[in-house]
Length: 478
Image (cartoon, rainbow, N blue to C red; front, side, top):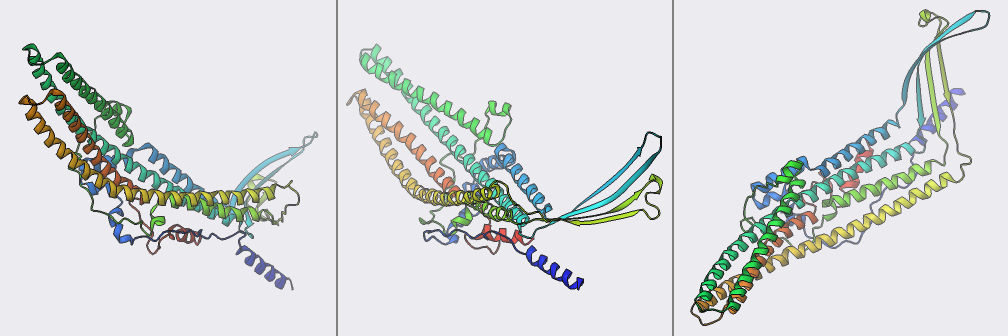
């Protein structure tokens, strides 16, 4: 009869141990636009997407940033912390084993005494009948996946920042060359008009105009030199250089802004697998999964916990005979601990867990909204910046021709210096705008790669939008 009762009890405990309170995670259903096939965006699936620009200097800067950048190192450390937290959560589901040894002597005022020594092992284990510790482990694993995705977000942002700063530096270098070339021409104008003024062929008004134009370009040159220094120091920080190297601001140059390779046109619609591409979305979903698991852990607090203990060892009145003879002792025990009154604490914990889930759900949905907006804007910028560059290219060509004709007329005395200076100013502006438009064109490619998730790898066999969920489910089976 006892055997039957014991078997029934064991069966009940086994069934209870297999259940978990709280809702199982289900990915939120979102109204998403129809996208292009993933193959149409294959140029952005390379983890080292910046190599498409074919600049060895840029490649080295990106490599240095991924190795030495402090923000990325901190993110990697946070992943290690989350991985350790998973180990802690798993350990809570396992029995704990401890050893103890003790020896002591007690006596009375008559001088008699007794020595008592003990040594043994004890095992304690709490039956996870309601799935509390399994839910906590699930939450810890989800936070690990979220921290890994956050690290990937920082990595993606870092590589994009390095590329954008490098392209900005090459744009400023190009603009500095334009300013220096223009300054040289205007210094020659000043020399010519000084000679004309001295010989009575020109007025002081004309001389002062060309001097003012020269000073304006000199100021632009100094401003560009300042911006170059600031961009170099920004790049030095991104690639993790030492304070001494930051002060030196020595950034090697590769291809000019006009020599950098442009990728072919990409489709105008969003990719169908954007949710799987974006690490910030995966991070937000990991937090949502964790919050969902915490609801189950909080609900389990309503129900009794059953800790079990067992110990075995030796006890003896003499230390030298502790492990000899009939000195073995053992003990088995169990408890049922059920909450009766805690001033509403458990209920409040449940409400807190449910509110945290709603917060993470709103955060996840907002992250998805932001991702699609950013990707759509980046696609539009990629297309329109190419058209803008071509327009500035036509303008610069026309202004160069206008300057050549105006210069000939001014040399022949057919027009005054004012007309020439106006055309010179327009040409300088067009050339500066062209260099800036080229940088915008390159930056649009970088920002599009970032908006599409950069280099990404979805687990083999995982379809769009399902990567994190299936990886989480696989983790839970371990």
